[in-house]
Length: 319
Image 1 (cartoon, rainbow, N blue to C red):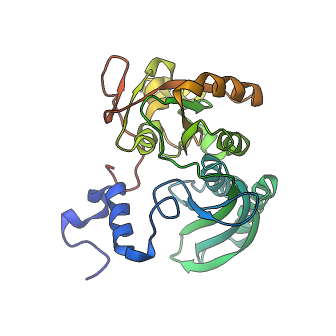
Image 2: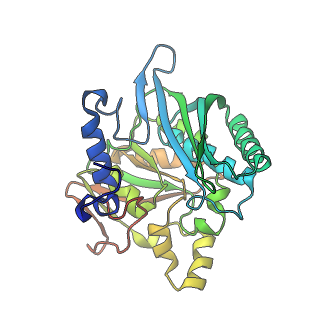
């Protein structure tokens, strides 16, 4: 048995990302504990001693040719690597602590470029209070570069991706869509906002929007559904510029585009007005939009009862 699929149905791009993850978790067996200690959310939550009861862990990476290209300044690519991970910590309400950096690079790549990449990553980490305490370097094929960062932080409680209940209000920070026009290299993780949300017991679930609202909302809902006011979507100026050039409606870009790295969260219905008001007072510069409500029945629909069109990003096709 080799690594290349011999049967079409065995190809990763036929399985879809969720099915691939399900199979890997199953194959790991007893080594893979259930959530929140194991897979199932943006981060793993490990109980520990101290004022902040949970140690939060996650890992993410950037690949040349997928997350950035040869036109990307090295410092910007390094910064993106760090903030992709910090955004997951933000969704868990964690304060960053330390990280491990792994590089797999082709022998033909420039040492000067990699040094600049590391400077960008280091500056972003320092600004966030994250220490890079070790890692690994390995040689890959010429022309290849993959960088992964495993990070940990600390939180007062488990704020997971799933946990919402029927009736909860759904809210999102920032503006959505069009990140490919440059924001995917220049965003900053919502660390302060995430830590504040973690401190509010009425916040029942939270995730960051890395794959697009269309993909990440179902991940937050699990078996539940939602009614979304598509007219209320916070459409970014970049999404409107992109719509003018490609003909795809700006609202559709806001719905399906990835790498916004905003926070999508659910709030108990009786506390939604208070949380919304208190958030605006705490973070007056951070836009906040109420999108809709969690429903008992599965599926996402608009206020007219129709399923929105267009899906978000998936590494291996559907799912």
